[in-house]
Length: 184
Image (cartoon, rainbow, N blue to C red; front, top):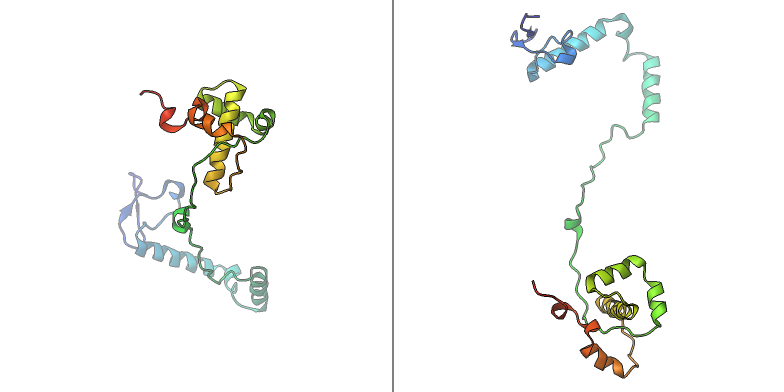
């Protein structure tokens, strides 16, 4: 080894800096031709040892290889690599169903509607609408439920209350979109 830490390659005779983890044993540089020469030297050295001379010959070695192949079936067969599929490649467009104007669902008692909703949803409705009274939140819950059914394409039940149509047009609880938007 040279005082600067470099070594002379046994194949190409050029100086190189050996890998720090293998400094004491590395005798060839990283050039592809020199790496092949290093592998050939290593194989020759391994085969020169008396214990390794007949490693690949004889009935015992044949039995060893056969046992290994039996324990590892299909090891040498190359299976086709699975191509990773991203969501964007497999996503297909879906036709939209005919959407009807959403009407609030007025069926059911107030307590039934409120008990059926998780507290998180109720809190979200109260936060987004600014309503804190049960009656206001119940009306908005019915409106949102009805709109959800309309989006999903479910048939809406007939509304049997005659005052519903009048209240839906005039009551501030049923207004949405631009009607609820405040100034910027």
